[in-house]
Every structure is written in C-alpha cells, then in structure tokens.
Image 1 (cartoon, rainbow, N blue to C red):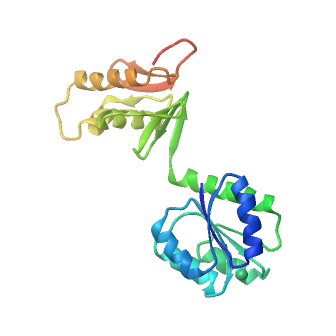
Image 2: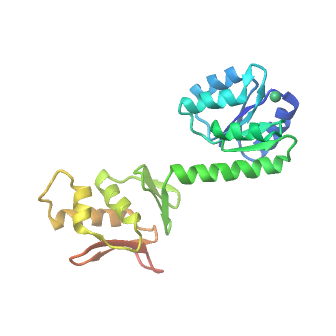
Image 3: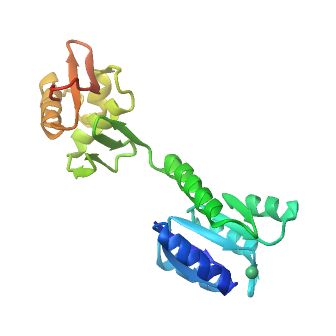
Length: 227
Ligand code: CA
C-alpha cells in the first residue's frame, strides 16, 4: 500500500512514518502542497493523509486541486482545527474522512483501513466463488490468488456467469456477449468456449453446469467434484 503523507510538522510526521511503515505502508512524506502536487503526477498512491495547515497553502485548496485533476485515491485530512466548518469544507472538497489532532495512531490506522476497504469495493468489482476471483470489469481472474490467462471469449463467458452465481445465464445472452459479430454462431461454438474454460478452472472449486436447452450456471463444486 503506497501512502502519501502531506504534513509539515516534522516530529508528528516522523512518528506517523514509523508507525505506518510498521503497519505495512510504503510512505512518501512531503511537507508542502507544491511537492504533493508534483509527487501525485509521478506516482500512483493507494491512500493519502493530508494536513490542512501547510506552509505554502491551505490543504483544502490542495485537495480540491487534486480532485479536480482526477486524483481519486482516498484521502484523510488531519486538522488541528476542530471547527465544524473545516471538517465540512474538507469533506466537500473531496476528503474521505478526517481526524482532529491530537489523535491516536491506532485510530488513524483503523480509519485508513476502513477508507481503503470502501474505496476498493467501489472500484474493483471482484467476485469470489470457491478459490476463484473474477473482476467483473474484465481485468482478469485468479485461482487461489494466482492469475490465470483467459481468452477474451472465455473471460466474457465467465464474467457473465459470475455476475449471477447459482443462476442460469441463457444461451442467447452468452452468444451475444461471446460472439458479438456473428449472428450465426452455433451451440457447438459456445460449448467449445465453455469446455476450454472448465479446463482452466480445474482446481478452483467451482463448476459450470450446462442445463440442456436453457444455458449455463456457475456454482461452487461439492467436495471432490471438478469444474
Ligand atoms: Ca501544519
């Protein structure tokens, strides 16, 4: 997890860097708004912690500028000000959460975890079944956390089945997704894709069941069964 810390109080920052590194974050620490603008151009971050009172500007202005430039990673604001207005302005400017100084590092860590969980579930629509994980946005699949290569057609079949695990996806729907250019694709062509997919899913603890005349369904395999 790459974390950007924007904080001009060096002693506070040093403590945070130590604690957050211990918690597994890889941290870039900058002290000025200008530096923050530069580093987000150069690197991708998973999460940010932003002080509001910076020597070269207001953290809220920085936040607004970052969000305006489509910087989308979750950001928590730290503020010594406990005014309601600042918190509201921060959230309105695109902060995901805030903490008022002084705070316990454990609380910061818990808030960072909660923020990234919320963010991940919004951004990457992964679905799990057995040992299989599928990104419904089409980015790929893993079995027991190992990436597995699928062809575009196999991936189209699998993502449409994984949108509704345990339910039948009819053949017409699958045809349209898998062979969008070919009005005349045969049952056989679809079966070929499904049987290739089954081979690649061996060991995933799932099976793709054919329901004659209806379509296909993906479900968790019973013990000892194969896909
Ligand atoms: Ca400050």
